[in-house]
Image (cartoon, rainbow, N blue to C red; front, side, top):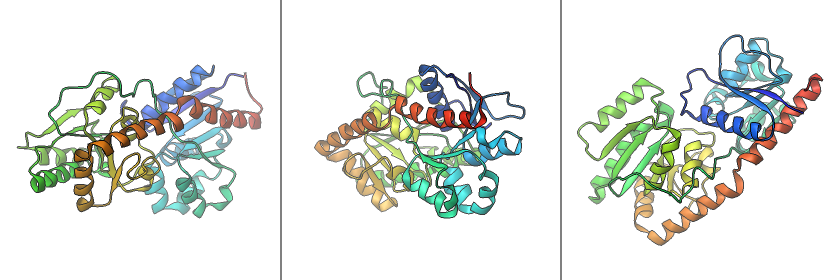
Length: 333
């Protein structure tokens, strides 16, 4: 049975944005399994498909329902800000918009529990499917870019929720406290001009800060491999593609102690977490100076990604939801 799937992402998502990466990854997994899939930036008048997979439940899933798409044909994945911002701030409204959607998918059990706290009657519709990463592409063995060391990398869309500018403040505080000549690169597409302006202002006059911009996916493994530390400063996350990619490359991740990051990082085992600047200073120092522990964490991080986040497993789980939606409608090819 071949399923035709529209993988629909928010219309302002850049090609290297998280939802775009996730949708392209799913397209590959589905096509490898013999199905047909198109990645579509949301717009009015999306064509006929067996299933519409919304990568952002609020911004895409809700809009598809309002456009008249049969909710039984929709699978909506909660990707991060849609849950920890939109839902948390206005659960009652979003519940009314989304309640008829066939399946709601979260990346973690914590995220599922958060939705069910406000919508317990969705028990049979909210499913946990961990995201995946291409472990053959994001791997430790290969070339790395040439950078000065110690080197800290931040990667992801530049927008307020990612707190990209804060990364400069944090590394500056570490440099001031320790005297270490730590270098920082902030890579990724500009998603919000105000945050980008703050990044540029804080980087001005600091020769230890690089702003390489929006790097193509084929280049990212070289940057992850070069990093002594991969830094995540997000306020909220679903499950970060960038963190998974970095872990797949064997990078040592230091990340904010938030729910999405805790789904990937076991402190001291697969990465390090911090709540504020003081904790960051401690954990960055730990990451840069405890070589034996750092190497152990890098290996464990890679092993976790390989064991738990395969593309084939993710695609197979979604395929079951799609087939169920098709069986309800009674259409297939």
